[in-house]
Image: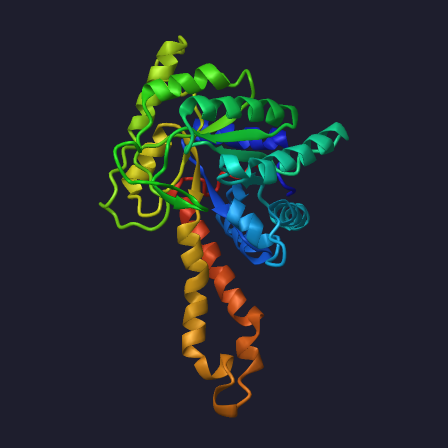
Length: 343
């Protein structure tokens, strides 16, 4: 199947909301990690989301000039070709983009998709993220309004992060403290600024104690039940029926989350969960194992010639891809998206 059209992406999100499951959103930094993601989704028979952060885009652009737009466009075009060989629908997304990188990343990518749509084609990416969590909420939502209008015209869904997620992600960092919890007032102000779908669809990364990166269970207090309060408070404000879920939530910083915490988040409207730290480790772990077990083969030790078959990147690269794919299959199981692909 091809990269999801705007219509298919909307259907994916609608199905997740109705079925109380979420799509793993897998960060990729190379053609190989892209294939690992596609393979994992295909093996789980789950549609999914593949995303590129600003740091990932810079890496993809090559170390000579480190151009984020070049890197992300190149991988997106590659994905549009190779995704045809996998029997799942994949949406392309750009992850965390702070204010100082908008002009060098999201805005140029929006312009590319705007031109594609004007020419009768589908957008290059299906969604983009604006991370204004380091700004005041007023400034954050002001920029979000501008981006949402452009995204809607380009048939793209916008993701917004309205309050801080702890830890560090591509240079954006927040302390781990009591500010990591979105309030009902924050949610209502978001609805006032961005609407509830009539101004364009958006995904909402609300904070309920989330922390990016690696942490052990128990070190962070997650409150996924807070999402229910945000939905209920906003629904009441806008006269929505009791039990309705106005927002499509995104779960950031989920490494180390318990199965119970994940399930509570799904029940309360999470349709997308970012997976990066765990898949990075899954990709690297077998490579380290290969290098340590085959030290004399991957290095030309004491004047020897080594073993070409051992240091060939394809040898250890296949192990890395298989391991990352297996972790994505596990993520699909945890998020209940296994077997839900649109046929």
